[in-house]
Image (cartoon, rainbow, N blue to C red; front, side, top):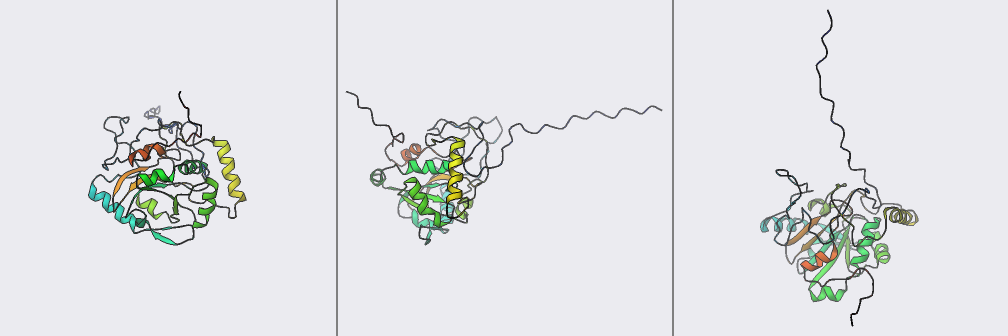
Length: 276
């Protein structure tokens, strides 16, 4: 008897055409990743009231992707602040300082960076260094950078970037983890950053050169770890939180300064135009 034909089955689904590539260590990001307009609030941020900023672009009925839930109530935000306040950070001399001591008595803008060899982090911190201390003092706010390298890398990084505000490290990334900072890259809509001047090739080459000529050949932190920005204090208060989705998703500096009453800072380096 003739054999009956096999039943038809649909072909397997093709793999997604834009699967995220593996993380590159020194700040490269896929060329097809774009960036939001510089001063636009991003989905997943928490505003001054602590509520997540909605994502208007996701499809109806589909939840936007976020690395971790943003605490929406005052009690939840206070509990999160209290939890991370007990964890230690290290200063440049290696002394352990409770993270909460940095914001219990004052309001602080805290920027978590990826790692000190990342050229994107370097150029972002170079612009943070341009914020006049008088601007921060008048607004009664302090600026703090948190890295995740050994404390031995703090002083060379400050010399490299010209950064003279407060800086600490969380080598075990315990605060990063507790705050829900993302690991790995998320392909997200982005536009040109106002703070990044180098292209992928030149920035990565310079980062590699710093790695091989430094006293210790390491990435000065976990290359897969992303950072974020918070406004904290005084007390166990989280007023704003933004978790970076990829290495270019840092918060534009002036948009954060505006939230704490710090005047606009010109990061272009161009002389001001005087109209007569």
